[in-house]
Image (cartoon, rainbow, N blue to C red; front, side, top):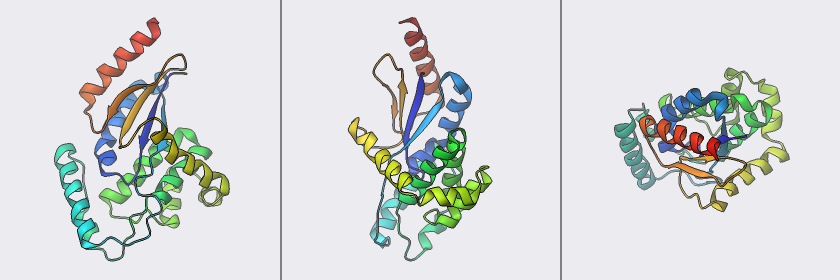
Length: 210
């Protein structure tokens, strides 16, 4: 079945900037091109708290994304002390929801982004992620049981390897895929809806004509 594969990380600022675009793409194509999420693992396994140099660098990125995309950011994030910018738990949470209810995974991914960037919540914490899963219609106890399972840890690690195997080095990256042909790069990085929809409609028309 033809589909879109979206390589992203819920704690990637450009993915947050791209969030309204991918939501509208998913809504526009619906069952014609369902969106499959693959987690990129932007900073998995980070153990050191952010220092001032890293805070300054990330803040500059956020300001640029906010300017380009119009997405809201809670800059009080940078007043925190001791925050460890480990994206693995948030990515693993998305993999968990994808395993429980695939059709809710994009909505859940979006809720993590909104919680982190707009609401200033700590989405490296399991209890925060479980709360968001519950709000997305996933039973919290079921979520927490799977979230720490060996199966989900392995699936998350496999996600982190999937993009690099295809030469993907940055996020967001969107591929259009057809079982009968090679994947087509739609965008590597931020791209506006007005460019995405015509490109994908054209790809669909060509692939259906082959």
